[in-house]
Length: 442
Image (cartoon, rainbow, N blue to C red):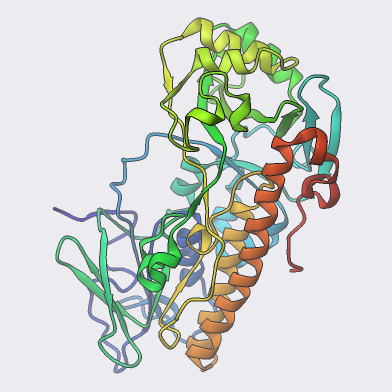
């Protein structure tokens, strides 16, 4: 099958081109075109004082290529993500031209910094604000918008499924793809998501994610009646409103896209909910295994939300009434607590969800992706610019990612469990005790 390319000119950053200097440039192979992989690519493009620029070869002395197994248009679903404490890293990773356009990726471009400076945890039956958590520098962003903006100006080789990794010499690594092509470089970074193929090559069975014992629904809804959209938006807390119900359910609802601020019928809302097995009236815990439920439906979501306070109760009922037949797929929530991996003398490592697959309950996934990208870039610059030892630099990077990632995966899953056992545990949950602070000091 043909390889798709978007953004820029084929081979601008070291894929399938000849470097005319005497010495080949240092090269990074990035597997996975998600947030972490794109940030690394953008960071490698920036001028980090790596010597003279050679516009006919590779910018800044470092080549890179990005490869993704999916087609450019194969992901129709969209959802929101938040970052806040990691915002300070972005100027190191993104060019100023993209920094100035970050409002474009917000789910609601009209939200200023003052409204994004907090996230809220609210009680599911009373609407009481249980905690207002500072998130300075915060933005709620759309996944699709983020990938579009952060991919500007860089090549992405789509429809390339990784099939194997080999090590042709002491200082190189080669990625082999299903279409028969391959690419060789000095470091391979796996940023290919929670079910990472790179991770499986490094760790075998130890790389398998663990299914979390709960149900999950994540979907978008647009209201045909503008009064309904206005009613919901007015009653939700700004930025992110994370609702928790004593029966054992979490239901977060927020804006996902605002195509026309003056036309509420264009507003898209995101609904994300997890619940304990005993909450589900259709599939009691004794009759099914977590993650194996059939598709949910708006009718089912309205039934489960019937004892929530406004606006979630109305939001689910109105969604059901306008389109009762639309299925909502039951997402399988899985985590992976990182363990040390063999870097093959600093030639292979992991980042983002591939390095620490985390639940969203403490809003740390994107924050840690950004931190990984910045710290991986620092490690590469230490080698390519400063002449540092590659094995030492990449293994130090990996050790920090494993330590931080393992702590966050466990803390976020603890938050999920506390939300699902509200009466017994929620007051002492991580969010109520430490908020959304990073699990390790920056």
